[in-house]
Length: 392
Ligand code: CMC
Image 1 (cartoon, rainbow, N blue to C red):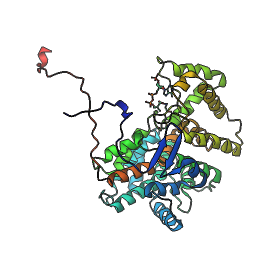
Image 2 (spheres, rainbow, N blue to C red):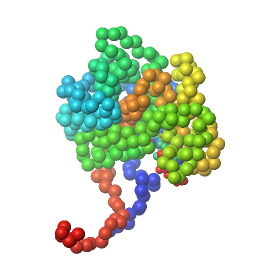
Image 3 (cartoon, rainbow, N blue to C red):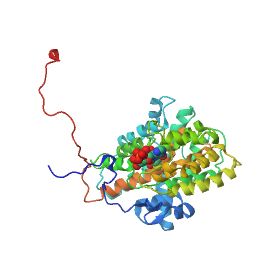
Image 4 (tube, helix red, strand yellow):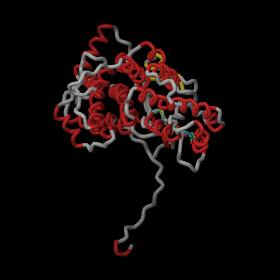
């Protein structure tokens, strides 16, 4: 029945053409639509990068104003949807809530169901990007038992998110511009990463013609795993467990021990065989953020730097080309901004929503699109006879 390639984990399988993002893993380079992420992190803004990823070009001023207007138009949550949160136990992980709420958007919006219509696809993408901060902030408020705070649309994207997370009713809340800028930079760096596990999951679900909001919720579920976006939470837990520089070599030995399931979280990558360029930007930005908050002697940051130093001198990590990835240092910044650990992966999900939407839209416009349907190598029984239950 034809010739198949056996490729567990798709290490050597290209599933599509894409114009969106390019990774040069050997040299540690990442570009969105031809622009380096370093340049974008330095000069652009998250919303401008969203426009770029969705449309292929940077916007002029008029296009940017129209895009911002459209995003702010969609930030609110329907009151019936807000009631869904009450169905979640107070200690539900915010990623579980995000998966559920996002999937349920598919029951609310019928103006985007024609996935062959570019206008419908655009409204879907704008709505998703606009609503994710509101959805995530409400998940956080639910988890701490505080009333939800709605969006204030005169604020920029990340300021709005910070306010929805940290403001309380009847009290003034001033958004710290340094925190908003730091989040904006982190969001730019997380916005897309070509055919990673969650994006491939969104594409796979979408390839069946599934509702796009439901497809995004599959991406959120895939992102949650510790081998993917959940690594940012796992890194902070790991650093807390290591606790002190004197313990670093013990944990490096554990990571090298094939009988020990422990891995150095935030290290290694399927595509990068060099420093992840995002980790470089975040590491250097850590210094700036920690200095601003008078946290220069942050113990976890010092520990992370020491862990990196020891690992990069160790033959095991050198031979396997294991370098810090995007998740290794991002949690240090999130923590400095007061973002709780269980909200680290939701932050990643908010930022990656544009990548998922851009890939879904690209796939929908691709005349070569086919349902994603991998094959398998069957290793089970040959045909055998059914045996009655009293004879087994
Ligand atoms: N600690 C110790 N050993 C490692 C690590 C690590 N973090 N990562 C890979 N290795 C070893 C692995 O055991 C294997 O060794 P051997 O050749 O002796 O069998 C070798 O390096 C190659 O690794 P692999 O598991 O075949 O690589 P992969 O491409 O299948 O997995 C990965 C990539 C990112 C899942 C893996 O490196 C990992 O689990 N890292 C820790 C989790 C993490 O930081 N994930 C975030 C990834 S970047 C952001 C994102 O995707 O969201």
